[in-house]
Length: 410
Image 1 (tube, rainbow, N blue to C red):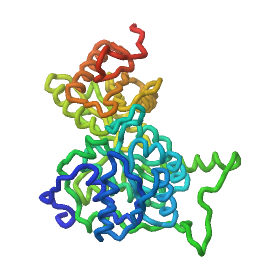
Image 2: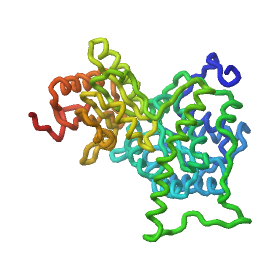
Image 3: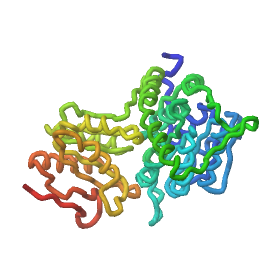
Image 4: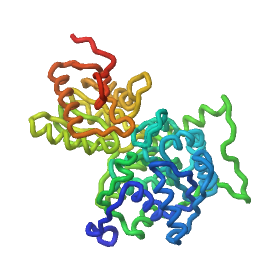
């Protein structure tokens, strides 16, 4: 495998640079963008690659993020390999067109550098924008570090452009924590990366002046339901393709990805379920808990859409108490991630106790000690047989402890 990657060829890249290198190696035809912090370097770097002749592509600077995704829709419908990047308010402005892209079954790749949504204005990372787009009909991957931002971007093209999928894909990475933190990255060679992604093979119904077709046609009650059901089925049916692409990537890189990553879960009695960089922090905390004799583990969905309900259920079915960490303001309800994990556990015969922790909003740091505190609370739940505090809590909040939805103690 030496011709495909060399462990001595180490680069020091942040997550943005890693993602932009994947865009270059995939030979993206069109990148339409309106830069926004903290995702700006991804599109800025791609523009530099085009200007310096490193790639034969087209960088289109538009007037807004709404226009950026609109331009991506047009370029993808014409058969090009298309990608862009955004964050936060820009992502929110894109949302209308995200539904257009998925409804037209266009294989666009979108790098989302997760950042808080205003107001108040904040440029740091949380998962508010990720949750905003969770029902837009896109496949969604989650990177935990810079290496994964690179790897998953390459995998995204291969999944999106598969003719049995034909759906857009997002790759999420935590704003500033991943996007601006330099880490060791082991890239593929340019040749190996492009051979893995392959040439784009447009389907027959792409835009063509010689064979006019309609994109984005109007449907009312006569066909709209059927269209959305078919689109949902395509998302759910993408699972085998995603797993095949991950397996193929492992062969050329030595790096293995699964739809749900688990750590020390074989005999775990308490677990944290998390996304993004919090996964690595929780792993360190779990190892420290193991040193104290507490059987702690971590479950981390790698593929957020299609949501891996079955794998989540199987990973947690024998755990006594679970903490689900939501890095987004719940807005008057339980956290969005908590709701999906709870739904996955609903059919488990021995349902564990499940607590929702809201944490890290606006980039607030989540330290190893924070995770240790959560594990200790979950151990108390497991020993007591019920949730010993509020079902929903705010971890790392200054001031009085804030929690909601108290349980009845039996």
